[in-house]
Each structure stands twice: as structure tokens, then as C-alpha cells.
Amino acid sequence: MEATRIQLDAADIPTHWYNVVADLPTPPAPPLGGDGKPATPEQMGAIFPGAILEQEMSAQRWIEIPREVREIYRLWRPSPLVRAVRLEQALGTPAKIFFKYEGVSPAGSHKPNSAVPQAFYNKQAGIKRLTTETGAGQWGSSISFAGQMFGLEVRVYMVKVSYDQKPYRRLMMQTWGAEVYPSPSPLTETGRRLLAENPDNEGSLGIAISEAVEEAAGRADTNYTLGSVLNHVAMHQTIIGLEAKKQFDKIGLYPDIVIGPCGGGSSFAGIAFPFLADKAAGDKRAQALRCIAVEPSSCPTLTKGKYAYDFGDASGFTPLMRMYTLGHDFMPPGIHAGGLRYHGASPLVSQLLHDGLIEAAAVQQLGTFEAGVQFARTEGIIPAPESCHAIRQAIDEALKCKATGEARTILFNLTGHGHFDMSSYERYLSGKLENYDYPAEAVAASLDHLPKLG
Image 1: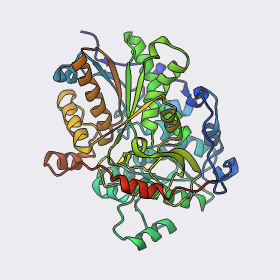
Image 2 (image 1 turned 45 degrees about the vertical axis):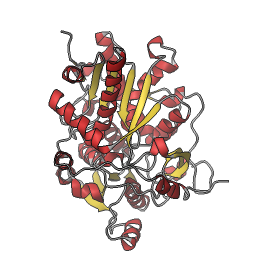
Image 3 (image 1 turned 180 degrees about the vertical axis):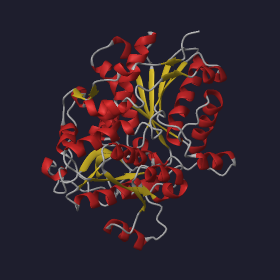
């Protein structure tokens, strides 16, 4: 039988990240300042180092990965590409199902792929402290790890519902030396205002971003780091798909369908963008390629949101970005895929969807955990709730192949393990979880508050 686990050597770690901006049919819409004019580097420079800003605004196809970053990547990269043979057999499908397993990183997810370079560039710029937000805790733990690698202090604003649900993620951050506070918090003007309005506010990624940006903008020694959404984060994550392409070449296969979970968009971008590069280059293998971003039906940004300019945070501190959005004051329910509870989506992912180059799907909470449990019982890995969304879609695509007899090759991004998400599995296994579709009227009400541009 052919190998089910395709490994690469450390020498095969990509030397460059891929920037999809170079291959977009039309240039991306620029971020706007509060005056409705394109945001200047000076405005963005209050919270980001120069090297990150250059990457954020770059249209260069390949960006070199610094040697210092690649040396830390070697702690866990290249990550394995695995064929899920036991899952295929359980489904009775002719499809070949592969997953790129990012749970082998120190933080247990794909997030260090961007946390390490962000910490490196801030260290180079003479920054002493970093602030950030986190939902499920994967980004917070990753930037805590990366900050420790480069001797930087880290403060994390963790969405309150996740702070309560995931104490061991919080303890991971603290073990790596970070300060962690539930958001909204009393440490910022944003947090104090929201707590005064509602002391039981469960928080959102938009609120936590506001708190982290507010603090970073107010201190010269502090910069802000973001774990998803922005162009440079999506680019850093392409190391996932670039490795996967090398691994498929090794076994003489190429995927027909590429799937990633999507909250802000970095994990989907990481797995899909390098394959979209093949499509843009005219590679015959990629001409019928389908790339599917999968989100929760309770936070349906891509499937029910509006393609418009909106703030990336709840308080309007960030520049306006053109993206699919549910409205910056959208308050998502306390679902257990905390990393997907975000009102907007990556401008690059949004543009690709708007231009019809990728697909989006929304799946319900019970179905995702059902898929995660089936995957754990066949493949042995307990996946993070965010990853379960990609697994659900992969299983559904494999079952379509079973119905039609088509032997498609399916690749999905297994973004992390679920070892610190067992309270979520406990609620599912005990029958306490419920499906939740966000009401259309509530989405419409939130969208009414989009910024009015001339």
C-alpha cells in the first residue's frame, strides 16, 4: 500500500512565502482611514513595524522568509501531509482524503507560522512589548510562544467566553510568560465602556482587537499583532500550502478540492492560496480546482455578510477594509469554535470569493462536532473545533463522491488539535450543544451600522 504519511526534510522548508496579490485579476481595494481616503503608512505605523507594513502593501509574488524565522520553523516544520485511509474506509468513498496537520507546532495549531515572523520583525524594529487579541486561544498562545523566542513582553486580550471555556489555553500563554485578560476588560476605555453597558458581555474578536489596538497605539514601546485577516498574515500562512504542494509532487498526486476553515481567513489562505497560484499560472492540473472556505452557520460572514468597507474591530480604531462583513458591532453567539467568531473576513479571501475564484460554505455546530468525533475515532487525532468545520466539508464532499462514483482527491487543513477544547466535546457528547443559525433580521440590523462612505 502507498504511504499514508508524506514527510519532507528540514531542507525542504520553503524559503519564500507566496503573495496572492501578485496574481489577483484586479488590484485589492486599499484600506481607508476615518476620512474615507486610503490609509497612509504613517497611520498604520503607529501599531506595526515597517517590515510588516511593506508586506501588507506589497504586490511582490515571493517574499523571502528570514533565516532566523526559518530556524524556529525547524522546531516543527515541515508538517506532515497525511492520507486519512481509515476515514475513507469508514465512509466507503472512492475519494482520497488528505489533511495537512498543523497541530504539531509548539502551540498545537497553524498560528505560529505568522506569530514567529511578526515577533521577529517587531524585535528588529526595537519594540519591547506586543499586544494582541485571541478567540479560541490558539493565536494568543502562539504569539506568547513567539514573544518568548525573541524576548518580548506579550499582553493578550482573550474573548471572555473563550477565557472561561478554555482555561488551559490561558495557562499555556501564562506559561510562556504572557499576561492574559478577559475581554472586554477594565484596562482600556473600550472595555470599560462596554462593561458599563453590559457587565455580562461575552466579548467578541472585534472587541478584543479594539482593546489591543487601543493599548498599542497609546504606547511607543508597544506594537499590535494580528493572527488573521490582514494580507501579511495570510501570506505567512502560505507555508502550509507550499509544503503540501511539494508533498503531493512526491507521490504524484494533485488535489481536486482544497478546504480550510474560515474565521478571519488565515488558515484557509494558508492551504488554498498556493494552489490558486497554480491556477493563475495556467497549470492544467489546477484548472478544475475547487477551493472552499468553511465557516459556522452561527457566524456566516462569507455566506450571509455584505461585501463592503467596514472596520476590523468593534470600536472603529482600525482602518476600513473592503471585505465580507456582518457589521463591526455584530455580537456572535458563544459557540465553541471561538476562533471563527469574527464579524469580518480577510480582504483577500473576500475579494477571491466576490470574483468567483473560490467557494464558501456554512456548516452547523452539531454537524461539525459529529465530523470531529468520527475523525478522532478513525484517524486518532482529536481536532480543534475550528478544524472540525473543514473536516465536515471534506466528509460531505467525500460522500458526494460515493454517490457519483468519482474518485476525487480532497485536501483539508487540519489547523490544530483539540486537546484544550475537551469541554466543548463534553458538551457535544452529553447532548448539551445545539445548532444555531444567526437570525437574518439580526444580521440586517448589524449591517445597518456599516460606515457611510461618499
